[in-house]
Image 1 (cartoon, rainbow, N blue to C red):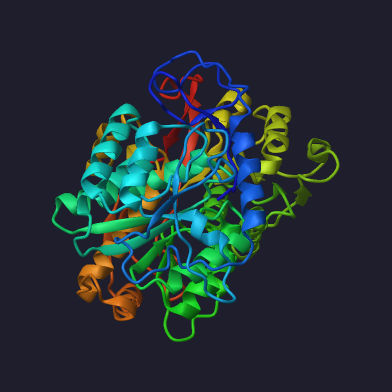
Image 2 (spheres, helix red, strand yellow):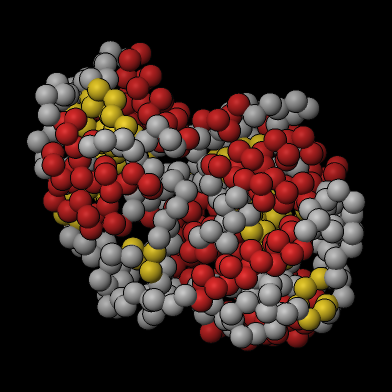
Amino acid sequence: MTDSFNHVTCPKCGYEENTTTAQKCEICGQPLKKSKSIAPLIAGVGALIFLAALGFTGYNAFVRKDAPQTPTAVPTTPTDANAGTGTTTTTATPTNTPGQPADVANALSWGDRILFTDTSNADMQAGAAAYASGDYATAAARFDAARKAVRNDPEALIYLNNARIGATPALGIAAVVPIGDNPNTARELLRGVAQAQDEAIKAGTPVKVLIADDGNDAGQAAAIANALVQDPNVVGVIGHGTSTTTLAAAPVYQQGQLPMISPTSTTTELATVPREGGNFVFRVIPSDQFTGTTLARHMLTLGKTKPIVFYNSQSSYSKSLQDAFSTTVGLEGGQVAKLVDLSQGNPTAELQDSGADAIVLLPDSATFDAAIAVAQLNNGQLPVLAGDAFYRIDALEKGGASLTGTVVTVPWHPLKSTPPFAQTSSSLWGGDVNWRTALSYDAFQVLSSARTVGNVAPGSDTSGRTAIGQALAAQGFSANGSTGAISFLPSGDRNTTVLLVEVKPGTRSGTGYDFVPLP
């Protein structure tokens, strides 16, 4: 799946999936005013200064024997990641561990620090201070107030549930997301985790969630993975948010035998991570191999055998999807007429005299606009098929009528979702959620089912991790999620089919066009 998406939050309903070009909210129709605030930039610069000054002094502030028992709180100055918010936060007093990077401590939180710095909330800051001091009742009250003020904030709900559990023995699950790089994407992922945690607690299973920010940085992702492997309170990991960070962290989890479930990494490279000592690396989203094969076979059923394929050779996601598509076409009776690199030259000029009978668009986010230009030039002359990077509202906005009839691969669609999930999520967050939320919810359900199968209790440490890993890898393992039954191949890839949707005129999205599931 592509690594970067830009959105605008609706000031009325809080929906965050509106694109930067949208004139009104997709959900409620509220006119959107684009913010010109530089606060997120200031906060980001402050975080970089803080991390540079911090250096290598140990990370054990969050790698501790009993995670719910937080260390002594000390006030921090505005030079930390909250710079520019006008508030004072609390941090854990670090314990030095030779040879370990200290910056991961500032990127992890059970509730004793606020990781999202693009907004300021006094109740969240007060809740973090109370949590850090061990005053869970006050922390819960303040997080509850923050949750009521901003209904769709998953960080508030996760910390609220952690505080309510307090010092009671609980299972620990880490959710690693790219907060520093894309807070909206991070929130989308955390909503699924928060919903699943909330349901588990109400069903009688105490589960605490540790939120981690890898900033969509491979080095930070690996450092966080090392910290989580050494924290006995964490029995499973949901993450990371992109293929790049997942690939960087996966070998660490595998070697440390800490089960990791990726909700959104599709690259075929993930299946090549060595699995000595059993498999501990899995994903709930179909790999690019499944997606490319499904798209190719659908094209062939239409009687089209000579596609022109547009992709980005510089993107692991785009390249692996193109490889899977082209290989399937060649093996099953067709031949790619031409491969065109969207990142080079003038891709639209390649349409002329291509000899193709279909257009296949497999961009990443960086080359998305170039792919849209190809569709607009084609304007319905040849049938168009596209990868899941097109499953976004601005594809409908920018492509408009030129995309009518385009078939797109998708990992999830609300009209194909398990009813309880769709209904509960809409009620919980005050509006529709997207595929990232659905798949992170599924990742949690997988860990929960494996915990049940392995009979893993709080305090089981490494033996619990081993039991969960063995349950996940066992033949016949299955979990139920928003996307139906979930099982795995020996490679750790999900054993599933891929959904196909078609762009048709409609009113659901507010653009005049909708993604409609094929029968």
